[in-house]
Length: 252
Image 1 (spheres, one colour):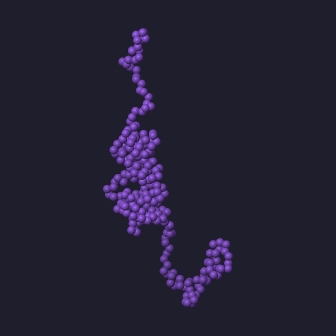
Image 2 (image 1 turned 60 degrees about the vertical axis):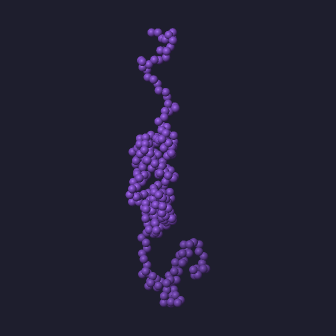
Image 3 (image 1 turned 180 degrees about the vertical axis):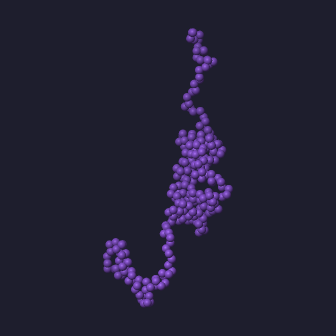
């Protein structure tokens, strides 16, 4: 740098070029205490043979989250999306590494889970992470719930889509969607479709409101605005003329 102390540079590129021009002479300059050696000669005789090839993949920046507690449903959350880990790690602490394309989970410095990184809220679960007796979670996955809702009816499907895709609180939305399936087991799928249709008519998706509809059955009550049922004409029915005074009765 001393050789350039009297020069003025107007860009970083110009400075780098000037330094590059001086590097060959600098690297070949003999050491004061070892006149027979220079930086260039030491590199050729000692360092060059020890060099390893560059990594196949370039360095990738990653965001780390340390000591993240695994929830009871063996999920961890990153950037609004939930990823599964082996169920044996429930309530334990893990470390998350979030790269551009992948989410990795480490426990005791060993990688225990890996998922493609998702940009939107949701849940990603590997089948092998579930306990053997946890079939409930298979039925409660978003894709399985939506497929089930398509077979029940359009109103149930609309409720499921709201809870699974439109709610900001993903975890609670998933719980509410799973609760709909439990209600179907208790009240029947056709009755759940009726209740969901009524809930849509009063503009509510709340789970407690739907459970109240199933319990109280307001959709089964007669409407206050219903039109009175007209009595069909019949020869055996007595009309107003029958009860009229003799003088008011029509004569044939």
